[in-house]
Image (cartoon, rainbow, N blue to C red; front, side):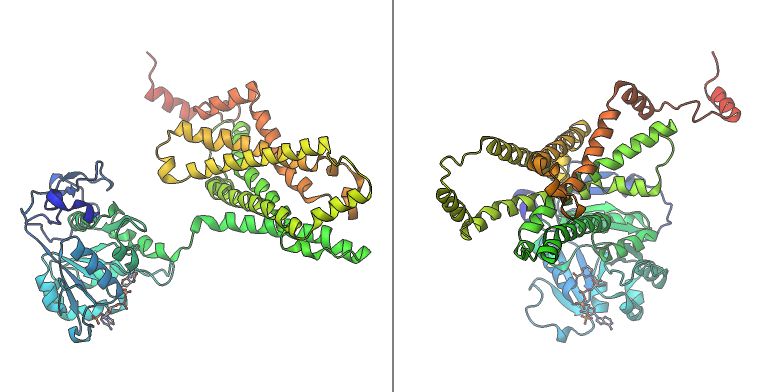
Length: 525
Ligand code: NAP
């Protein structure tokens, strides 16, 4: 953050594009050389830009204070200007009509001017805080723009509409300028509040490495992490990114919602509707609290098993094929990629179940059910209401549930990138796989200890429908049994060999051509 860079170190962190930077636009497959390095701020210890070397900032005052122009005076322009001024960058805003800009909209340090004058004042960088349909209006100041680095911050309005990206069209419109796509994923709000809030990554793409480096240097100076997004042909990906809403969560959210609907509907039919229709028993008050509390743990349990089931299927497939070098089917690959999301949604359901369970006794107490039960016992002459086995059972299943929730919380925390990054791969696997199976076992025990009696009594199968937890527990039990089978020494040894690169000769026979190739690369000594 630039505020942290105040004091003696502030000067060295000032944005200073390299003196004498060439403005020529370069080809896509241009390679990097030493003169194309990016200055690195003090707080950065390792390069963040892919394929880009870094060098120390030039000495303070070496290149002097540079001016950046922003065309357009809307929301993005104002936020960007505020942020740049706060970082000590000189800013000139170019508007079609300066008089229309309300007084006080921009900080006093920002110079307001017409578009042409603003561009002329800019040393190199010109941000286009305009909508792309207005880019052609800049053709009137083409001469002034020549040689400048145009930063295109626009976003797409339609996904995959088949036409060239805004940035590519801008580059076609102004071939004498360098076009850099970037900052489009940073909101005006993030720019104003500072880079500590919101995402700090600024993805940049351009066909000019030099232009990209200049923008990256400014981004870093503003407290962002510039990330090299490749050539300008990647601009479409960057422009489309803000149109996606949680792209990796669609499948898991759909699966979890369907599971919840299934268990809730099943419980409604079995516990509320059929008793009402057959015997007139009205227990519809259970809709709001009891029924969600019954459905949520079932969903959590199935979600948790769905986290581990694809790993087991993948292992079985590798054993069956006798190799790890064949791709998994698409559906399995996609499922493997969504395990984290499924786990987090399962964790959410388990947490809600915990909260609902805490609410239930409160409701029971307020509805005087406990007092009524005590009164009935006194009336019936029951002197010792203590039920030893009942207490054991309730303590056991509560303990299993609390422990499972605790482990799930730990897994959820370690799935956060900031926490996961400090774990080694082995530690991460231990938490996510080893402890995950422990959480699933405890959840199954929680369910079984709770419903052991009911599961085997005939009354529990009213209307020939088993209790919902009996359905829910089937999947995790199957997963645990499969997992145990994979732990058998003969099976696990074969799987380990396959995962180290061994291939079954019977299942994957080597063709004579491949044999010859092997002999050519490894001649016999
Ligand atoms: P905005 O508030 O509507 O500002 C757009 C500016 O464009 C206007 O202030 C105006 O400036 C200029 N303009 C309007 N009509 C024009 C015309 N016919 N010809 C030429 N210039 C015209 O929009 P914005 O929210 O700042 O967004 C600007 C760009 O930033 C967009 O491409 C958007 O996708 C991108 N962006 C915005 C955000 C955000 O959070 N707002 C985030 C990322 C990217 P003058 O009247 O001063 O010329």
